[in-house]
Image (cartoon, rainbow, N blue to C red; front, side):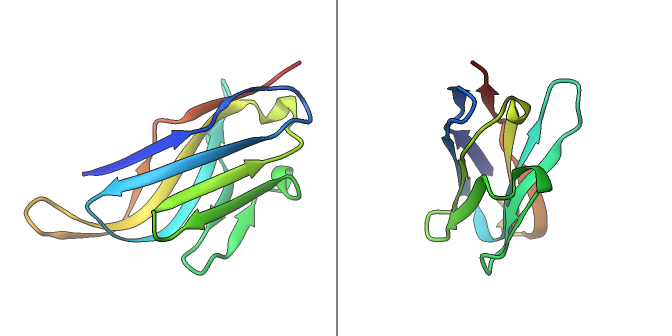
Length: 125
């Protein structure tokens, strides 16, 4: 009932930039927090950046000053502008939303987390 689709990943050289996009659709009544997480091979999934309903953004220390998260409320989209990418940024990036949704039989589900399938970012020369 809720679809989360990421795009924008790819191969980039160190120092380069990428912009990730995430579109949320389906039976969504409202979205509170939207965010980006990443998981490198053999490592746990970690938060990269989150943005609340009031557009308050939080970043992992490792990306502060290089990454910028933003959201389009009308389109239920969230973006991650990534500048000065480094090899240690290589990972699969996942979009997450915390949303209130409606089931097919009209029940309201409050504050559920939904995840996309991820988009791969590779930083290499």
